[in-house]
Amino acid sequence: MTEYDDQENIFGYRIPSPFCVLHRSEFIPAKKLVQKVLDGLLDEVGLMNYFSFSELEKKILEIYSSDHQFDKSIETIVIKELERKYKNAEVVKKIRQVIWDRSKSAAQNVHKIIKRVLPEKEKIELLDLGCGQGVLSLYLLEQPEFDEIQLKDIADFRYREVRSEKRLHFAKVNELRLAKRNHQKYDCILLHTVLHHVRRPDEIINFCIDSLKPGGVILVVETCVDVEKDGLCAKQHKESDSNRHTKGFLSLDTKNQIAFSVFLDWFFCKIMSDNILAYYQFNSPEGWKTFFKRFDGLNILSENCSCKGFDVSHSPSFQTVYVLSIRNNRP
Ligand SMILES: C[S@@+](CC[C@H](N)C(=O)[O-])C[C@H]1O[C@@H](n2cnc3c(N)ncnc32)[C@H](O)[C@@H]1O
Image 1 (cartoon, rainbow, N blue to C red):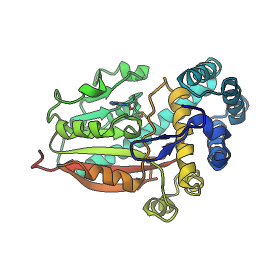
Image 2: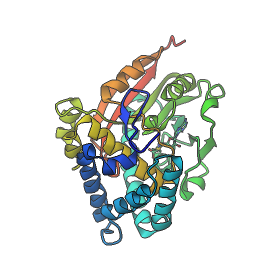
Image 3: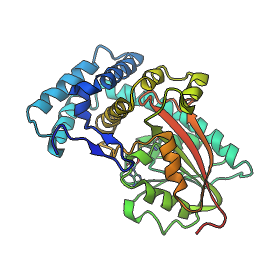
Image 4: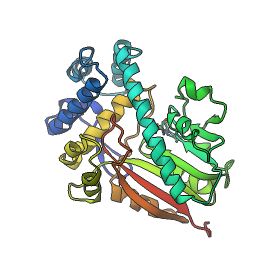
């Protein structure tokens, strides 16, 4: 693979490397929006003087152009260099705080949806699958329906506060051995911006179908690309107007929406977080629906293009919320 190669994800979308987003002219619109978003975020936390997008860009391109082959080792060098400079610095700490605060509103919204779809349940057995830092579940614990919450991930990225909470039970899982042991165990499984990070989203959904109790639901919050200016997402966005960057995102063509999402995913997973895996399995809102419909025994209860509250400032692309239920006569 060379620096100019795009890869195709499992939904057939062409995925450029994060480096290409910075230097290929076809991605100038994506790069401009990345710059606005990152500089806006730094401004929000009062760190414009410490760090800027152009500084980051310069560093990446400098390392990158020292070797014209784009491969894993170059990516590792870039990450190491950037980590050395920015990790543990004030900028990372403050941006993490913003992410932390955003998890609170995400948890409130997740709770609202769970209450709506499982109104009868006084106590809910919840699995936060692909929990990442685990902050969302930490906030969910404040709600009376949750005595304890199960967390699973293929890696352990939990924050200290999450590790020390006894009612959050974490298990590190091997992605291929997720199923079997969890047969019909949970009332609700949360996949909060997880599916596009996963190598095989179909395996995760099959695991969820097997692991839900009858009447249980899967709550999927997913980042979407290929969002049309006049589609449902755009209309719902106009109603809520919750993120000032979503208009900019909508004005990008599909290629640039993907490039924008790739860069921010890469930046936040590799630089701001602890090297979280990113598979860039981006899909359109319609594409996700088509994907879910392929599973026997799965119903789409509701679909909502979120702007209302799933406003994650570090990833201002459209987040679509799907509630999936399993049919009683599932296989
Ligand atoms: C963007 S993070 C989302 C974290 C959290 N749900 C949140 O919203 O804050 C995606 C997470 O999915 C996890 N992941 C990737 N592949 C997985 C798999 N096959 N099984 C479980 N988790 C997986 C990653 O390790 C990562 O922590």
